[in-house]
Length: 136
Image (cartoon, rainbow, N blue to C red; front, side, top):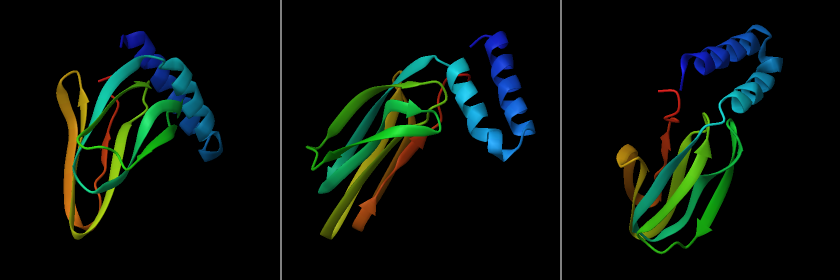
């Protein structure tokens, strides 16, 4: 992202903070509009007995992303989504198994793993959240 856009985003965010918490959502909306660049991530989930997967699918606003879900997914599960601006990438698989649930999630951007987490136990929720690569 070039300096002009970065400076504009910082100015909008700073102005929003100066106006107090009541104006915070307005500042986020302004940042959302200013940073309209998109990026793709691929979510990957492996494990056993995963009951559901929730993930940011690309809709909504940066600080209120639309959450999509899949029930009883076939594993390994993979989904590529397009996100916008400063919206974080996030995926949360949930598994339950009396013999021990296992789950691993990954968030991949341009071949690089941005986040990876694993969990196991009777009931497991292994979530991955990654910061937007835009502006880095």
